Length: 150
Image (cartoon, rainbow, N blue to C red; front, top):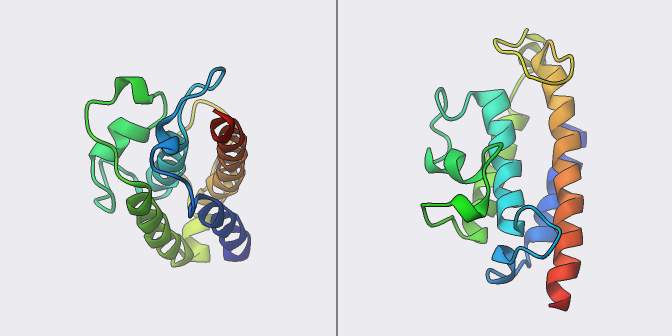
């Protein structure tokens, strides 16, 4: 399982390595969020689904859930968001945590249900996380093209 995740996470990290801090917070017309939000959301989603963040995991600051959780948006932020370099560090550390998960973990039944899909095990959710991360990388790439032209 980890080879596909490595490929996906490496593509994300490689692309965001050179994102300009100021451009990361521009929300272009027709987009619902910013590049920084998408990066943070890609971090928070697997942390939530695989590690129980924010209630059962202390791997990330609790404020990240208010900033990047599902249904959040930069317009509502009350806290100062982390820098891109902080998010990159967290994504790299998370990569190690995910790679350390065992095959037995992925076979376990989920202790929760999701309002979409038919996910039964952590392995099912893991596959969705890969698709989710790639989807957000695509949005980050499209947003960067637009923001670079502004």
